[in-house]
Image 1 (cartoon, rainbow, N blue to C red):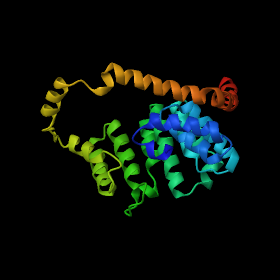
Image 2 (tube, rainbow, N blue to C red):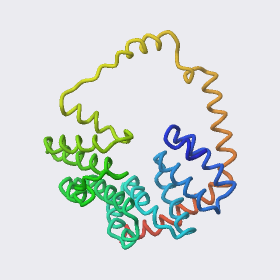
Image 3 (tube, rainbow, N blue to C red):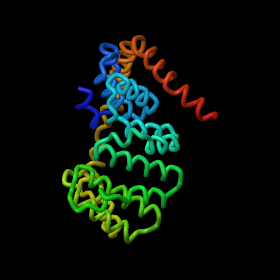
Length: 249
């Protein structure tokens, strides 16, 4: 259920993950799923704690890039860069190493180091003609970094290459390319939608919907907070205390 909801309803996935933690907090797959649910909901501290717990249980290094991205989410790009240079990166498969490169480039951009971000993304994987699962995202990130650095013509070239590789529409490269080309899209249905909104208010704005939503939230919180809060808080405090001490040093 958590996996099915991650893309379409991150908050719903997060709620289910808290229930799963209450029932099976010592199962590594549950901790990992809870981490991704928290990550999708931008609860990066909780996500990092869950990922670390899952890594301790299994010894699996595959979560290293997303753990580094959590550090970015916590506004600690330097720590993300430290992780990008750690020995663990060499144990990742090719997809994991590309993901780590994307995270490192993002951390460089967080620090305002646009040129360094561009250099970080330059790699054999970027230059390869063969399309791999990561190709579209890598080309897109490179194009976006070039555009941020004011290199518009190069950015357009790489957005076009990203479109070629993006067979499942995982990026909005086609929209970015059209924007650079000055193409404007007009939504013909927008006027009808606006008229419909005037006729009837959204259900979520009605008193009954608000009451039902509050009841669901209260029920989820009541079921999960008492059993999970202590363990999750302990994880967060235990895992981050060392970080805080290192920051002070």
